[in-house]
Image (cartoon, rainbow, N blue to C red; front, side, top):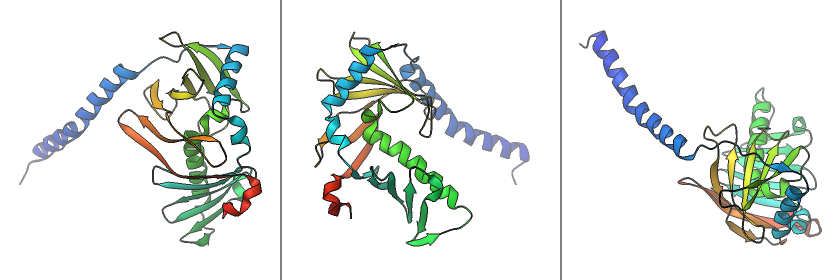
Length: 247
């Protein structure tokens, strides 16, 4: 029979075996990628760069798009009715008819049955958080003139103009900042992130796999973040006049 000291030693060895490589990996990633949030200059030049980015993506076509359907990372599926400010959010056997104006008016279904249990609010909040995160990876460039957004012009290391965008309110994590890197036409190629949910500041994700949707809006289909891929599949868009395709 093992003695208590021996058992503690074995447990301690197991913990070190599993945690030490993780800690070393995080330390390596932190010192390799962590960057301070750059300081930019707000004003007309920053707004002009933001407008150039929107024009490169055909912002007018996006504004005319009333319906967007997509699947994020093969886990969450969305049918987003932009003009109505509603979205059907699906994951596992759960569906939430999400009211984006008044979340409390949202309806929850589990296995296609309407659900009114005590934890209904938790399912609604999950849907809100999924929607805020996943749609941001789809339409973030189009949000640079939203209320509460600050835009600043930053000179990157290669002396190119980059657009620093900070969200002072709204969403699930207000205060997050993103530094957009653009090509010669003004189209995004990547952004760096200073966000609460990622402990390493300045990590860069690609915005290079663009597709032109049926409405003419340009939307991404894939992002690369370090060694990870974020897939966006099943993209469908419609204008309000072609409402039959909403079904």
